[in-house]
Length: 265
Image (cartoon, rainbow, N blue to C red):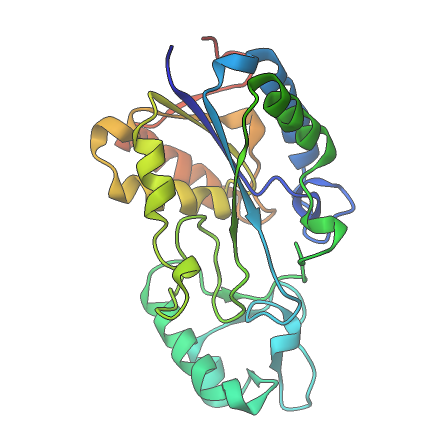
């Protein structure tokens, strides 16, 4: 039996529910299709890995962390650069974090990912928005019952001092917090798969960075095992090009692309 692993990125209500705090258009339908896919494949899926974005309200990428000269918080989707912090356009609300905020902005700017973006508070620990989208949650529960096994839930993002788009490492890892460092356990587990199916939200952010980070540790033969279910992932509005570029670049590296309806075992 082929070891088919399904890696689902952040399929949570705040992203997938149309009324979610950071709703991704089309994500609800992505999850409907993914749930049907899991029910159809059933026991042919060897393992399911499901990542969960997991935040505190106080977080470096949430408005409450920052204030301007008038002590007003930034609005959602504000971009904060190293220069903004140096000039005092934005400062840490709590002065004890000011030196760290400047250092963080500098390190983030040098790592060639996205700049610091302020997001609406989302996937907050203990809230409904943190939960898996209901139809998918039920499909994974059905799979657990049928397999007498467990979905591998992987949390990320609870360190308030760094962004954590990728499920396998934070954008700026914190040496004092192992949860922000490279998740070798998950990567080594995926290496053992014969096929790695990819789905989840968002195509332009967390799915993109997760797949890229995993691929950067893989040999080419492992990248060729990756198959994106393109009808089970959508980009954040305004970042459609980043999602398209990600798919294009990963196809060059060997990743395959199909749909949940077309994939056959």
